Image (cartoon, rainbow, N blue to C red):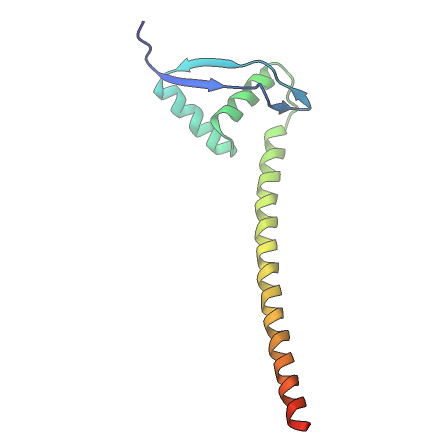
Length: 115
């Protein structure tokens, strides 16, 4: 038997979704065009294709709260913002440490001259 299309494997064996351990696997095949549409839709939501498909299925089964994707997207964006802020703070701390070291050297030199 010849199978054409994209193999799409989706494992839920160790995945927690909304606090529930998923124990079953979903697997199906789709053609390239449909996969590309899914990929684009997932990308627009900031999700992987499997995560996007899982959200679609859970929404159909009425187990995904409304606005869940928006919350996840917001949290991902906020995490990125916080990482950038921490990076800036790290750079500021390095600058401060350099200033303190420079001032310590100057104070040491002044104390050597007066002694």
